[in-house]
Image (cartoon, rainbow, N blue to C red):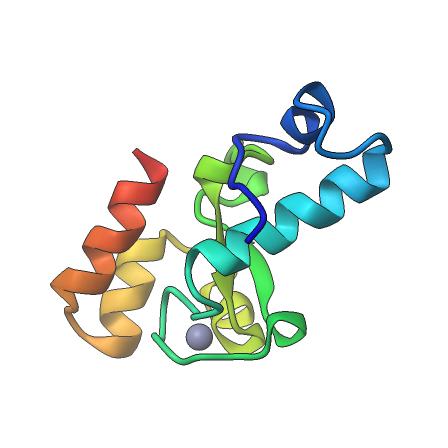
Length: 109
Ligand SMILES: [Zn+2]
């Protein structure tokens, strides 16, 4: 398991890797592994390479490239959510799911 750190830079600071592309690659993998390769929105399991990383708060709304703003999402969910607010979109699409909502809240807070 790759340790989950707050940003790609932390993989360099902590000497887990020496190059920036490698840091980014490890970071992206760590986020997916942290959620057991599950899409946080629909709850389905995927192969690690099938998952995308979704900005919970969209970049267009000022969302940052930090672990606390990134979650694994399948392509369908990532595209479907677009720049909508995650909770509104998730409830509208999949109904209420307190367990999954809490999982995301714990990650972003
Ligand atoms: Zn999904």
